[in-house]
Length: 204
Length: 264
Image 1: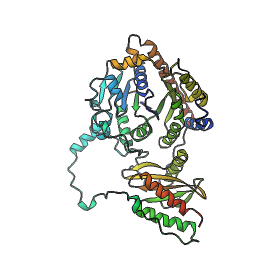
Image 2 (image 1 turned 30 degrees about the horizontal axis):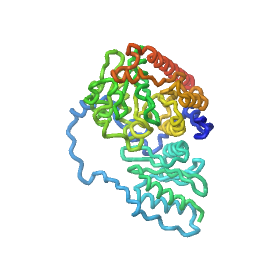
Image 3 (image 1 turned 45 degrees about the horizontal axis):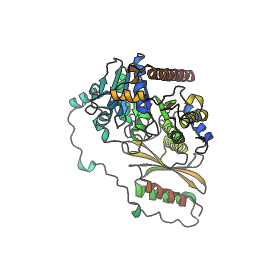
């Protein structure tokens, strides 16, 4: 029995393998990109370029640091239970697409502490963007392309920042939702967001 | 220093056997080689040292990067061959599926290894492309993928390639050296047919010419806690890994030449 043909698509496998053998163009760095300094751990090391022994020495000789004031504590993110999620208010039937996206954006921000939300179209062009991060778009687009329909992808990009990328099939074609979250989303929340986004991006 | 991750989508494909014996082949060839156990199961340590359950190791460094490398590195009788066990903190982390959680610390570990003048750092990772394994691949210069020559293994190849394409976005300089067929059973038609099918399916440069046979000598070597090349009758199996080492070296040199050529 042929161990290959009944089980996988040879042309797809060959394409994926050839893609791996080709050099990848590194992402262009834009000095003006906000939010991508030394805290961006996706590409750059967030730890100082010193050997551990030297670092320990530095820590031992450093002056004592006073405890931070109580009100500076980082709030802990607790994802809402799926049952408690309310879909965004239904837009009037003739509401323009971008207005519906704005309602979706507010719902996403309120329920998931999402910031820097953006949506790309099937060609990777920006439909909606409040991030202003060209590099985030680049990364989200490439991750969505590489995932080839296998669901959402998340990448840690800072000490408490996850880039969540959710590709979504809509009546207008495939769109890609990107946002920054404090924690990666569980599968049931991804499903809820996908459903609401499809509804938002469907013709009224 | 060049860092090479040994990773696969599927478990039980001979990653640890390949890692230990390839690292030993490089060390015998005179390269100062560090073999790191990046698999929380700790198979490299369990294979090569009786004290592995007591040693601090790679995962302890991820938990506390202040631990000096000297406390992690275990020398062997071969001067050019050292290893770092998985360590005692390996129970705590199998990754939560989020890439990047340990990226900075894995990179710090590799910088520290490079500062100790190793020529090569080979990292045996846990199966699957998630958690710390993702971060190891995202920090490494190159990748070797052991692939068991059997039908089920072949069916996992598309998922593996998709995962690696995703990782190359995070680490664009990752040089995928190729897939090495393992556990080939010459007397079993399904095994040889699967190997032949994979060679037909993938581009030639994606597969190493050298393939690792399934052989009882690997079980005997692991029982004694030694690389196969050290066993009295291990010359044949050792030669297989010498051949793989030569292929790896040639691919690395070709890639570096290409990079140099492209940058001009």
